[in-house]
Image (cartoon, rainbow, N blue to C red; front, side):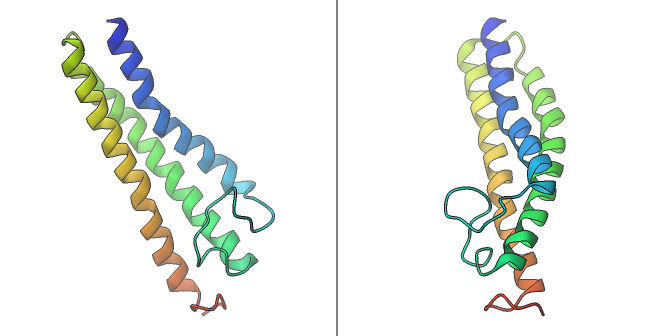
Length: 125
């Protein structure tokens, strides 16, 4: 039971992080374009308009995805309650891999939204 609880906590890290960063970046994205913190792609760093828009889109996506992933991940972990450590560990790893895929898929969605709203040089369409 102790290992299952540990794995439950570990599988909650990604959704909780997505929710927290989504909430923070919705209102308080990095004020200056930088190479250290924030949503950093070639398109998002063209100018302040693309920077702000990219953070608005990605923050909303992360918030929504985190809210959806949190209960689904917890319910999936219930399937491994009472199982041996290997099964629980592999199950938790698979849940985490799926969470990572969802998190990474927010990048092309955000990039698509940027390209729909801005030209390649960063000017508004």
